[in-house]
Image 1: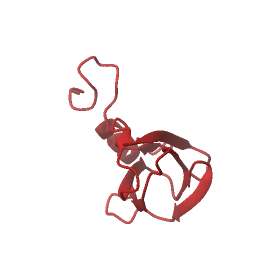
Image 2: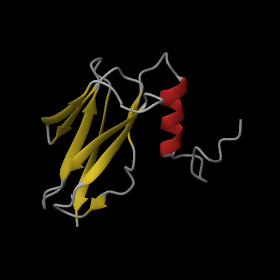
Image 3: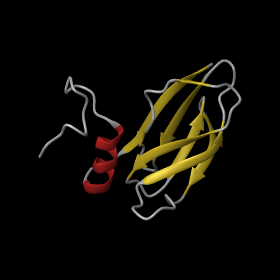
Image 4: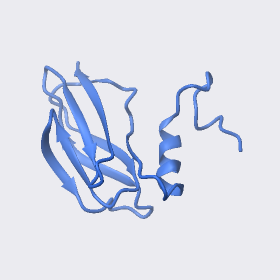
Amino acid sequence: MNDKGLITRDRKTRKDSFYLYKSWWNKSEETVYIAGRRLLKRPAGTEFTLTVYSNAPSLRLLQDGKEIAALGESGEQTGVIWTFHGLSIPSEGATFSVVSPAGTSDSVSFQAL
């Protein structure tokens, strides 16, 4: 298999698409991955959508440790692309975490512009 589209040229960093395929094809290992994590600086107060790749049955979204949303299904055909809409980052920045019922989680910290 040719991995050039799934990892960076230095072959050390896995791209978002790697985790999309992992969520879709690897049913033996639960995956939770927040996409778009390399874009760490985002405009403060501007709404954005957080995309998560996961094969979990449901997900909870936490902002700075406080639950702000929960989804019982992904809402799209493959069942592995989850979207949390209407999020914003305060001027001091924020850390978003996504947690499955089994405890598999991922988090990313965004800085405000």
